[in-house]
Image (cartoon, rainbow, N blue to C red; front, side, top):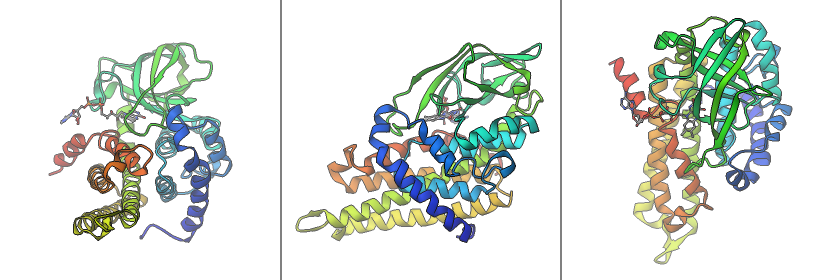
Length: 377
Ligand SMILES: Cc1cc2nc3c(=O)[nH]c(=O)nc-3n(C[C@H](O)[C@H](O)[C@H](O)COP(=O)(O)OP(=O)(O)OC[C@H]3O[C@@H](n4cnc5c(N)ncnc54)[C@H](O)[C@@H]3O)c2cc1C
């Protein structure tokens, strides 16, 4: 892979041992509790796994997107779908780093890097997801403050977040031009309420919550970047990285599904021979392994482009759509080869299959990816 080097191999060792020790053993409990242990964030901060690609001057690791990708690969390798680090590291930290004023960066990034602050980004509302221009949450400037009213749903890290970037209308008369991003620090903030942690068909250990803002007042300095009406542009600029993050996890999850299935079909027997001995099994796995190889090649190309600052919105939509759709197909055909065991939640392939389903929905649905791609045709 063109984007990997020796420094990243050493970093992979660190990420691997952390994921094996701190993520793998807790999967069942986290699924029951619908969230990871809060201390996980502090532990990750202590070993330097948070804000990997944020400059050191702001407490980050001073790395690149390649470091983020390696951590996500290692997370997927141990079958973890609970820890919302992709949102914290790969998304929220970059909004603050890219658009924050020097004061905002200094105020929030070091705490995010240490794990003192867990972060979330709240765009989706009960009434609108794909059509972000239609959000109803308002943040109205009143003197030196913004007063926020509205509701958000499906927010990753919602239950644990101490810092939430809220997409809101600072000018409700406008569509995209009225959107701004306002940062809410949740501790002791009156009018802010978390709803239930939602029950999901997959990614059960990941905290996905509803959030309510009822006359929440934040200082005017919490407007990200300090200029109103920039939110939609900021969202559009960051979405390629957000979509690439999803693609990295999707390819790693696909790879894991194939490896698990090869192992299982070589061990399990039927009609006096290993399942792997049937032509159907071999052909299914040959197809799946090829899907992984092709997806990896495209992903590597997109990561390389992103590292050079050349990944455009269309390329990101293509890689998100391609890898998540392939993941769905591969996870499904792999699960079939497990027979009834594939339907049992204790089998990792069952978890891979349920987790795969949402990848085609969040971060922009497959249909929205097609709309974006089609605009350039
Ligand atoms: C587990 C999970 C975690 C999430 N985390 C976050 C988070 O951290 N922050 C956040 O803000 N959001 C988050 N989301 C929300 C997610 O991004 C939205 O669910 C997604 O963007 C789709 O929006 P929607 O659910 O409102 O569906 P809708 O927009 O109502 O779409 C419903 C269907 O209509 C289709 N559709 C809509 N518009 C078009 C169109 N123009 N052309 C063709 N088809 C169309 C869609 O593709 C979809 O199939 C999360 C969701 C889940 C499930």
